[in-house]
Image (cartoon, rainbow, N blue to C red):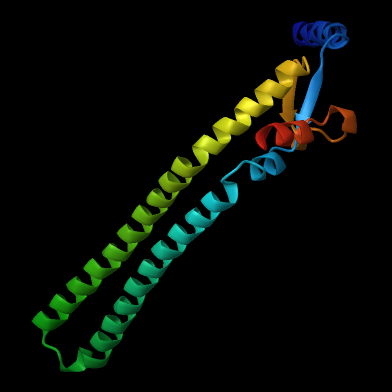
Length: 164
């Protein structure tokens, strides 16, 4: 315990001494990302794809509900063999819906990554350029701080660089 406390005290003093020459900036990365050319278009494309997948899943769900209602209405008139056949078909439909949902989510994530990765790269490059130009040692997200002086915010500089 004493060893841990001693290490913490030494680390605190070391960081305090180093921080005198350390430059730290912060950025509102969400605002900066929205300023990247193509952001709105990519978000719209992802949302459109998401709607397509959702509509397909809903259509399959309606087909399932219709088949289930038909089965339930005819249940008393069906032979044991017909019941088993219908139940197997319903189970397959249900599995198909689950598979479509899972595949749709996976495809949506892949589409989002495919479209957003180049934007994240451009944002990262702009942040690095502003940090190097401003000789900052660290750039962190705005949400990390409970309080920070506005002069350490480089969001506007990054946005300006992205709009060039």
